Image 1: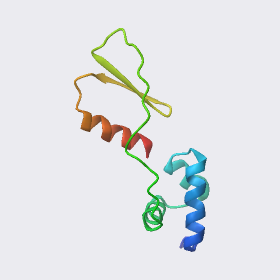
Image 2: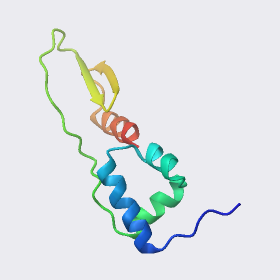
Image 3: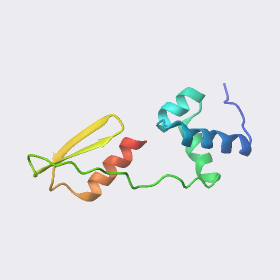
Amino acid sequence: MPGKQRTQDQWRQLITEFRASGQSVTAFCSEKHLSKSSFYLWRRRTGDLTTSSFVAARVKPSVDASTVTINVADVSVRCTATVSAAWLAELVRQLRV
């Protein structure tokens, strides 16, 4: 069964609701009965560039300075301090989707 056809204004409203929701794309799309591919397509089409590859970080003193703990939403990842910054950036990006 084909999905509901929405206007550009309706997609803009949905994207605005998504930004205000604090939800992941997966949770928001599931709740609104949207396909993630359509959501991403319309987010690009409407010029929604509010997402950033930067994540707020808070440094906490660590007993073991050779490890790093990263918290994104409800997920914590602990790794060695020598891990690649590019790898960490990609991991955080994937956790935010």
